[in-house]
Image (cartoon, rainbow, N blue to C red):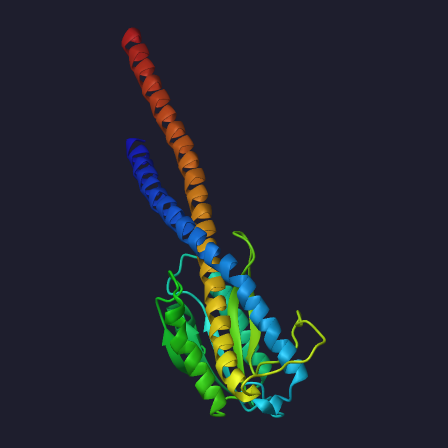
Length: 290
């Protein structure tokens, strides 16, 4: 019985130490989440209005005015930009966004040449395991994201699309809704100008100075970079929220396990005491009879 109680005590100590770690990780994730959510909420109005402005311009202009607006009739090559995380312990965050990315790749069809750009080590590893070509992989971006870190990705996407390497560019990321809700999303990033669920304002004409091509040359690439940056911010807030909730769940489970083990330990100790009392009583009775 003494051996059993010692084993239970060791188990309680081990789970208690684990709970300390998960609680600390929860607090760290909560701190990072608050910072990431502030960034998301501050940048959303700008990115939303910029996106709507492009849709509104695209509805008024000929798509041939600029290469980023041109839509190919036949889609042969697609670039998928996948946003995941560098680390695990974030619940189903990575699993859900990777699953969404693979479903999008499957939907595009077998006859389409698909390459991926992955932000986050977990996404790149998953794409390689699935046999999908990875054009480039970027790490350590979703933690304290800066716009300068996203610029090389946006420029790479724009340059490859304008060269005609790809007919479509699809963005797969996780949209931050709340601390407990994050939704994997797919967005057709290029070509621009296709009406989406939230079309831009209708009506009115546009005057471009000095010329439409010069204005769009400056405006459209910046929009692509802005949308990628916004997606990275959304993904970062979603990742930290998912990790915070996963660590909170782990801490709660550890607490429940400690309670169960403590109850079992007390039962075992009580049984041991009862057995010892019974043995003493039996010994005393045997001595009295003799």
